[in-house]
Amino acid sequence: MSTLVTGATGMVGRRVLTELRRRGLPVRGASRGSEQRLDWTDTSNWGEAVADVSRIFVVTPVGSALGHRVAAFLERAAEAGVGKAVVMSAMGTEHAPSDSDQRAAEFKAKELFDRVTVLRPNWLFQDFTEGVFAALARSRNGRLQLPVKRRTPVSFVDARDVAAAAVAALVDDHGGKEYTLTGPEALTFREVVRQTKGTDSPVWRFKPVDEATFYYRAADRGWGDRYIDTLNERFAAAVAGRAAETTDDVRAALGREPIPLARFIRESTL
Ligand SMILES: NC(=O)c1ccc[n+]([C@@H]2O[C@H](COP(=O)([O-])OP(=O)(O)OC[C@H]3O[C@@H](n4cnc5c(N)ncnc54)[C@H](OP(=O)(O)O)[C@@H]3O)[C@@H](O)[C@H]2O)c1
Image 1 (cartoon, rainbow, N blue to C red):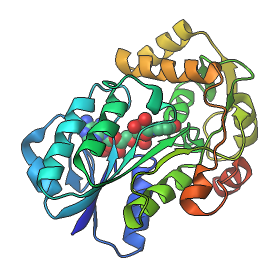
Image 2: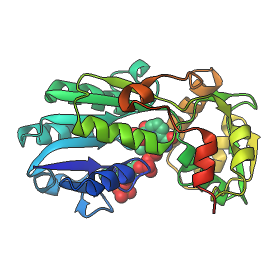
Image 3: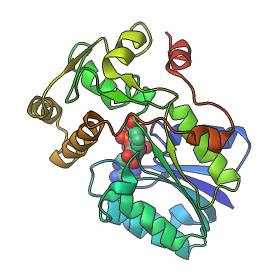
């Protein structure tokens, strides 16, 4: 029996897939661009995707209105005999409305599977090198403009810690656990940008902007309203101080301290 890693081309999923392979465990990566093609909007090959799978790592794309599709896929997976799920949502999802994409995936997994672990990471350091902040800065000569304040604190976490927690939950027994995964300290965006200059981060300068300016910048990139709205909600939560908390949950899941910014920088230097 195999593990199915959804979101397998993403920042966390890719690392989960790599680690399970390194351990010699049977695993298939699934997404639109993966060896096991999986599109949440296309049910035609879902049977093939869940065949011979006993455990699943679940990633629901942000702001995509795909929550009910992911829930339907999880039903298919349960029917096919999957017994264990590790669901990645985001810090604060426990306070989101029950019909929101991420919360709905959490609830559905708990309803369907015997063993469920929920991972709720804060913003990732890798957003600056691979993810949404890198994408925004690349199109604006290294300038990152976000709707937060100069001093908005965020306990950014390393995607490697999130992936390691996912692997631990898939392989060992963390059933029933819900981990809010943060880094070891709260930092401002400005501080992270200042320190990551000279690494493979394309972000060179940071400027706070209002929500409307961010909306236009993001819409210019062709991003959909729902995705932009979801990002805006997460930035608003950060401005309200709800992304600043540091938790002990990386230690609880992995038995070691979370990776600090200095190590992230050291290991992502060109
Ligand atoms: N980035 C962060 O800082 C952060 C922090 C906390 C939580 N999260 C959570 O992590 C998850 C991923 O977010 P992200 O934006 O950071 O993602 P990401 O790393 O870009 O990964 C998104 C993954 O979803 C897959 N995907 C997108 N649309 C799909 C579709 N229609 N069907 C199947 N797979 C699809 C993508 O693969 P293909 O393109 O190959 O299909 C990719 O592997 C979200 O649930 C988010 O809430 C992210």
